[in-house]
Length: 251
Image (tube, rainbow, N blue to C red; front, side):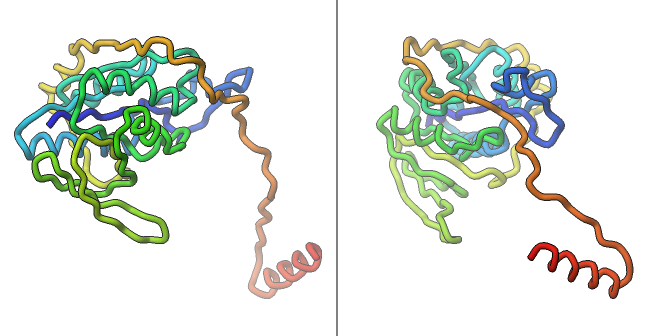
């Protein structure tokens, strides 16, 4: 089974950030980066499928510039067999449909049995790249998968639905799926795999002229606070009296 995994090298979100002067994006000087959490889960699921069947290969791919290759090398260190970087037209990184159309070029060249994406990225969280990729390829799509079981090329997929419901579907490849973050424990790469990943050649695929991006960020900013917090101190009677006064003042 040939499996391709979409990988996004995202900015860490749990840290102080600054925006560029034109407010078009986050200033990269303030960012630490890592593979998207759900994409780590996607990589691990692909590696498990390969290891359980004893056949096939796992190919990781990303879209963007040369700095994105660091995310691919982390996936190679986990045990992926090959990596591909897809070039993106200017400003297309903020348009999930443009990213999906570019990635579709690489997927068609490889003709995999299965494409796995993370359900969403931790930076923009649009949940659109996987469905847009499936649409561009004309393949079926199963989203929010939490468990993958296989029998040959036939897959049994457990997925989350709305209102706390779950669903089990059986499908034949080729297809695109997106997996939830945290459904497995992504492995750590061995020292040997880390050395291999560091030296690995990563081919670059040019998708050609796909047109201009349809979505661009106009402004990124931190919204002004709309509420303030007032600390109330003292004994129970004093606190209760202050709360009653605050309620009266609000009304």
